[in-house]
Image (cartoon, rainbow, N blue to C red):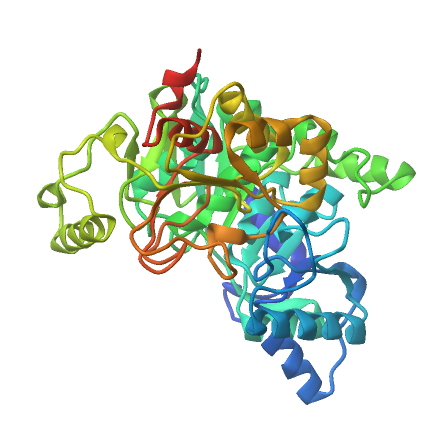
Length: 472
């Protein structure tokens, strides 16, 4: 009898084409699906052209324009700069020449790749998905193994539908209990990252489980899996359940008829075996988690919004003391200051982490009947054109506009500031994005990560604020 296996091991085993070393630690892994973008694909396509190779099974691929496009309220196909225009033009040529479906900037399904692919039903339980973006881990919410790959691996994947893959160590993260009011999936994953550190899951694939996970929406699970990469994980998974099946049912690209019935029967068996062994096991108790914000320049430099800016001298190691001191200098913060006293200049709701319809509903619930504080510029960038349409059907756009937010078109936008959505040097932003690195949102810009509802609360108060104070 074979030993019990984790969900991660089952997916890797099922997609292994060949073992490349004696112990099977390195394998040739079959890739079911990939989503390409204009920013990370050009060199891979050039490599194919130079070698005279074709794309193998282009129907498993989708191209989207999402990184470099502008998000001004009135959409045009003009890029903010010549470099971005060149990338988009070359991407369009590559998709046409190699027979790959493309959602260009004016396509009715345009949007951020990690929002678009799931909302169409292109990501299914049991798949392995590799793409040129580290937040491909998002797809673990469906019981699919997603991970980011580099340019040379993209070229190999395009030509062969495989990548050379080094097995990871499975890590269990169990979340138990009921989330308190005002606490979201974003707070859960930020609490995890702050506990184990930015390198705490290096070399691991996280499997999320526990009764808190079972109660989370699929969109909440996407947020968890999306940000798992920020603690070093190269993969993140949650076993598919009835919530996932309901979410996928009827989506445009999901299976239909007898194929759907057969798929659902298979998906219900996608779970770890009882007794499966993990390299590491972390437990988070939901009732102990509070709304989180980052104070530094790494996602693990975070605390409860009710806390204070930490003193670098209290850090355990010289390297951590040095990192904390540098972060506070960059962020312009003093040790001991109350986080709720930190004033902001900008508020941004968007990104592949938190720009789905559920996120916009949460933020709008805080903003309804309120106004953005004087001196704060606030923006909402929906994760896809489909999300934007749905929000307008529900009237959420009017809530944002009435509150003083800019209602913009979809794209990666200020998450990574590759277009004209950038912070000015020294500007401080409450942001629903995934990374707060130095210069991530613009040279000299200062980023505080938090949930969309927390961004809305900060925008109204003009400073970092516990959203639970806005319950009335």
